[in-house]
Amino acid sequence: MFSRFITPYYLCFSLCLLPLLSIGMALVTDNLGADPIQTLHIRLGDWSLRLLWLTLCVTPLQTFTKWRGMAQYRKLLGLYTFFYASLHVIVYVWIDQGLAWGAIAIDIIQSAYIWFGVLAYVLIFAMAITTPKFMVKQLGKNWKKLHRSIYIASVAVIIHYYWQLKGNMAEPFFYLIILSLLLLFRVAVWFKNRKFTKMMIPTTRKIRVVKVESAVPEAQPLTGQSKAIVIEEIDTEI
Amino acid sequence: MIIKTHKSIPSSEITEQSVFNQRRQIIKAMLAMGLTGSGAYSRIVDANDTKWQGISKGYQPKAPLTATPSDIVKNHTNYYEFSFNKSDSTSLAQVLPTDPWSVEITGEVEKPGVYHLEDLLSQQSLQEYIYRFRCVEAWSMVVPWVGFSLANLLKTVKPLSSARFVKFTTLFDPSHMPNQKDNNMLQWPYVEGLRIDEAMHPLTILATGMYGEALPKQNGAPLRLVVPWKYGFKSIKAIVKIELVKNPPLSSWSKSGPGEYGFYANVNPEVPHPRWSQSSERVLGAGFFTPRRKTELFNGYAEEVASLYSDMDLRHFF
Image (cartoon, rainbow over all chains, first blue to last red; front, side):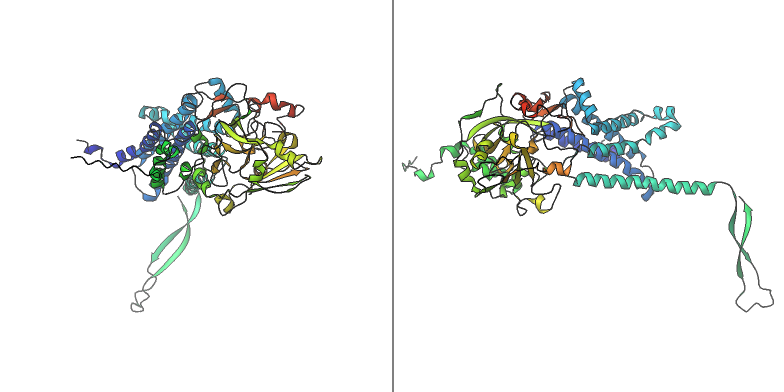
């Protein structure tokens, strides 16, 4: 009876819960190190970053593999990004800062890296709450515009991530490279589409037409040069 | 039928009380070695763990401070020569040879020279200093250091009147310190500095132990600086050279990020780091739902040290 849940989609759904399980295990077994709150906070943040990157991977993957029907995975990964980002924010506000709103305000104002975290979360939040179908319908054309802010969110996330670092740069550098490639793909597609759109604009132009004609009279049938292809340029209106 | 053998146990087979008392640690250590394949925890079974228990107090805080559990202090270090990860240095630092150790004291002094650490220590009376330790990354702990006043050491080499700053240098040993070998992050060796009046202040100590034991290697053995009113990175580890100089030395972090890390690095909740707030700190070892602690000016030592900076703009001299 559970066989209908054994699909790639549900596999992906379950895999995305593994980080939470592992963090939860570390939490209950007291294995989060000397600074457990910080570790908890950072791990949740790391996973929301990774899931955001994975969300951005779906469209390029779809283009390269020509495999349609990946939209549901993009939605799933996007919502998981929101899920881990929310836990990241909750741990900060509730556990780290103990809901001391005055202290939180001071901390945010004085910490430039948190500004970008806030920006990213606001955008991810907005995208997450506009996920249901009726919201998609209601927003119409604006839905796509809103959801394009994932690019702004991802850049905000990488700044948020870089600006709180003091030491090691290997892992952050890896994320930066991956994000650059993912965004570069969008830029490439945008350029390509722009060129394509230009071609579609109706103008008077020369196009190449292939005219095939029988150029040789019937009197010399055995020369082997029975046909010649003539290419002419002619003016045509599209 | 029960046959009783009344053969007495030879004394060589009797487990020493101190070892017996550590049986759980030993089992844990053996398990850890088995799991990680490293001798990281071999230090735990060392014999001289109770070197300075009940030593006299060098500084008494006004309000009693509870020391952070020692396993947190031993496994949460920023020792970039070994690793950028705070817990990895615990095992990585164990390879560092710290005995014998000598310290060069030089520069603007009457008696420059290279001194054996044992000789330096034998001239000093070691005491316990329970200090707050505040990292620039906004976490803090309370550490019972075993050490001696830096001023007392400097007096023995007779500083000249031209000595206005003190420059400290960490060991340069790329064969044991991976990030020195790979030339990662900072320019090695690590350098720190103090103004002479800061160095001569009674709160400034050189530590050679903590929690009544010899200083663990990951915490800066065999000799480190502790300046409790400054951010932790000022408290340089594994010191091999102390130089009295005329001009302010350029510390490693100031060199790497001049806009972010100044020469003074006094703990100050009013002066945020350019990228993050310093208004509060997470106290390590406190419960999960214990709120952050409000950071105090000069880490709570304002009464003792504020006069050193009375006419200075602390925002400018951060």
